[in-house]
Length: 161
Image 1 (cartoon, one colour):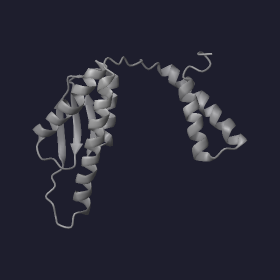
Image 2 (image 1 turned 90 degrees about the horizontal axis):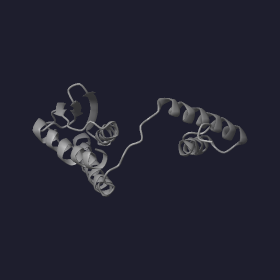
Image 3 (image 1 turned 135 degrees about the horizontal axis):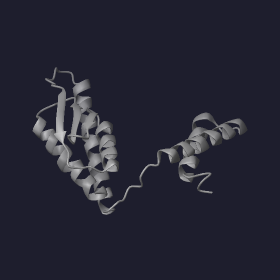
């Protein structure tokens, strides 16, 4: 069964999402099932490594930190965009040296940074372990480096490395 359907949860989730987006008909069910099976088979060809989670308790802490930061960032970006008075906003790029090497941890860090309004993951140079992000309101490069390393990288290293 695992050879035919290596990622059953992925296939079921894709089929469910397909039906939610397109409506439940016999044709959509059949097409969604075929797409889900092909996607799951393709995923097995990629052979992603299974992440090893060391500290489950840190996941809740990370989720709380990310939730609060996204909320605060939404408010800050809304003030910049909707503010009646002209604000001095300086955008820029920040290069941050990372200690984390785990691919799953780096993927989570990319999702966190990109989902936070006002920031974007631009590039990661694995040969130099250097992350480049773009920040909408750049106050100081040091504060952003400390924020990424102290709030996110440290927790992600606790979880994955």
